[in-house]
Image (cartoon, rainbow, N blue to C red):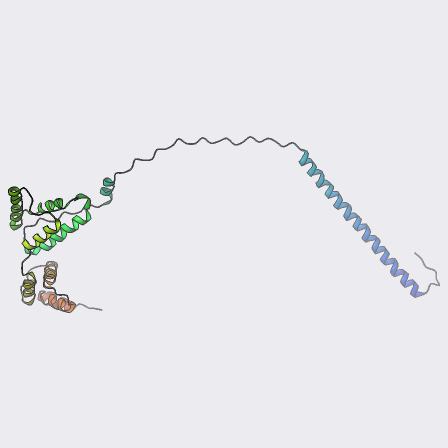
Amino acid sequence: MSLPADTPPAVADTLGYLQYHLQELTERQNASEHTINATLAGLTAQLQQLIQLITAPIPTVAPPPIPLSPPPVSPPPPVPAALSKQRTRPKLPSPPDFSGERSSRRAFLNSCTLYLRLAPEQFTCDKKKIFWTLTFFKDGCAAKWSKNLFRQEADTGIFPIQSWVDFKQQFQSQFFPVNAEADAINALEGSLYYQGNRTVDDYLDSFLILASDAGYTDPRTLVVKFRHGLKLNVQSQIATMPFG
């Protein structure tokens, strides 16, 4: 728009400023209308898609086939308790034969007691324990004592020992010396217990039995006496061994 030549500069500047802003507002209005029209077009398209989805027929879907259940499996038969114990328990070694020797009396009684504790299902009463133990009395004074017990049963009709506790007491009375403690002390205070020609293991077993019978419990006394009874060459080897 052109202005008259005599228009004052201040008025011309004001009119130019107003004209500029009017044009800017017009452009903004056009841009807003374009944006609104585009938004309306997008909303219209989405509305049409939604109407199509609503009015379209719903396809029928066949249900999945029901899987056939497998035939029932019968559980395995239970394993008998006795057979299960036989499978899990290792085979126990039987006690050695007993002839009544003093050196083996305690080991034999301990071996029998251990076996009876580990296999209680084999011995349901004390008589079975006693008769089983007597099967190992095959030689010497032990066999004679066993024969005497069965002779008494033949004479009276009743076995003379009825309980396992009574059997152990009579066993100790028969095969353990009356003065076991005094005999063991005398042996340890002398030289009868020395190793001699025995192996160290045999000497150790014999020494432990004597120490138990004598009632020696002081560790220093036991060590001193044990080393004193060893062969000289073994004592020398122990003396040169490093400790600590």
